View 1 (spheres, rainbow, N blue to C red):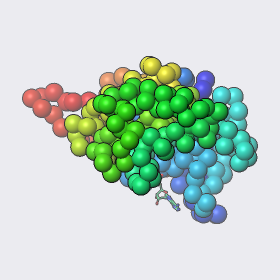
View 2 (spheres, rainbow, N blue to C red):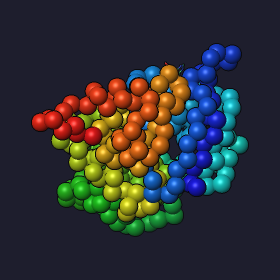
View 3 (cartoon, helix red, strand yellow):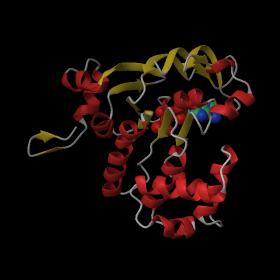
View 4 (cartoon, rainbow, N blue to C red):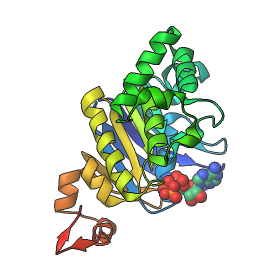
Length: 263
Ligand SMILES: Nc1ncnc2c1ncn2[C@@H]1O[C@H](COP(=O)(O)OP(=O)(O)OP(=O)(O)O)[C@@H](O)[C@H]1O
């Protein structure tokens, strides 16, 4: 097992009710898990806890997070520096927005690579272009010369994903990775994200509001409401026989076209 989360409980302030409680799930290499649920149900809190980047008021107050047989809750700053970015990375709604707007993408990509690895500038350039090509970015040499603001939202997101994937991490955490994009671009990026586990063996946890996206792309689904797991299991089992009323309501909210439900 790559990741094993047991009884994870997080509270934002001391002595307050936990925000997420008793979260249990596991993930194998190359698997995709989607976490769905309404706004405020605790989805982001779960993945931030795994990545060790809860806001300072947030604390894991119970549970275990075992990643590659190591207990992440015992990690110090140096341990985190060694695995974040390399073994485990995160992408956001608009990861491209996190790039420095006044530096060309190539310069930032090369610096990022050389910060983590002992590469020459030429080697770093080669790896960056290779990863941009894998993310279906046309003319990657031109992208390397461009400033982030010169690219569309979809292209910027692809650059963000390329940077996150450059060290072929074992685990990629994606927080609403497509929700800032138009529907057509969303569909393309969902397909590209689905290719990552197959081509790199990376496991993924995708946080999304969209149960349609979740069922389309993932092997397993976890449905959350009010900080708790309402339902968790294989995607096909959940589609065929959702148990919780809440999950049934989520499916019922997906539009139908010509009598066919698109999940
Ligand atoms: N820094 C913080 N301090 C205090 N409470 C917080 C903090 N961050 C989040 N919360 C609270 O924790 C709860 C869960 O938030 P979280 O962002 O994990 O939910 P979510 O399901 O990801 O929501 P969304 O889909 O809107 O992103 C919310 O009630 C939120 O107000």
